[in-house]
Picture 1 (cartoon, one colour):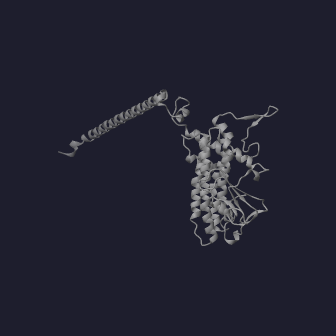
Picture 2 (tube, rainbow, N blue to C red):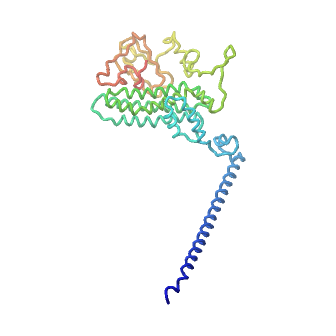
Picture 3 (cartoon, rainbow, N blue to C red):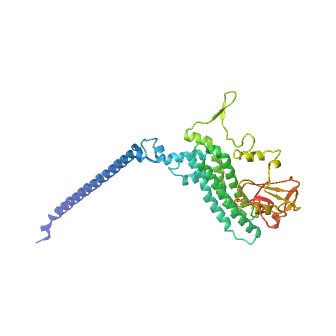
Length: 388
């Protein structure tokens, strides 16, 4: 049989192949359509269940939603259980616009903030909280400096102590923020700024302790972020009244003057007698000028001539009971006391007074040129911080 006898089978084979291809495409389209329908049913069913569960939580007070959920839902309205992060971002931008380092402010708070903690007070707390991590990195870098120069070694040692002081002041600030109510942050702002200002001082003191060389420049660069974030937190607390009012929709407190005009009420940093409000009444009476010494009964007397219980101030401080409550008063009689006095953090409510600036004198000879840091040259200090 010649090959031409199979000539008609060529077109037939092609038609069969085309038919099979069409059938295959049809089966694929049917399968894809079925899958899409199933997915849609699952999504719709899940959404319905979610909505039903949420409604039951909102309607049934016994199963009660959390205060945060009730607040974010507007008291039972629709919507998710957390505020929109876009609203949080907007709040951050409004707040950070009042700082000197806006980019650093938005970046640091934006990373740490979340929708469940989105009130202005929460964001201010976040602005303070992020300082700790940045300072830890900066002090760690300072601690890694290796040098045979005694001044550099002394500076590194000081930085360790200063880091502990900075952490303590940051913790005080955070506790102060947590303890303040919605409207109390502005009231506590004065004390909060004192603690934060000390944090900046600790950073500057660490830097200043290094000689003017490459080490000092490296340490200075390490603290740039820390100082910027601390500065931002100070600005946020200082402006707390204004942006708490604008973001939370609360009414601004106004103080009417005699002509009927109004002006924003400023926070009372000091009482009418010029002293901080937190000073107890008993101490307030003692600290008021005039009969200061007459109002004090010393626990111990220090006298260079031996007429007192101790001859040095440090001996008197060392004898202070560890569990003493109340104010511990040390009277230093006239004389020149060559010693370096440090009142530690554990020595609370200590008052030291003498017979006058030119009679009861505390002196020493430590000097920066001797290889010491300025931080360690004070003759009278509180944990290494100069005092008056």
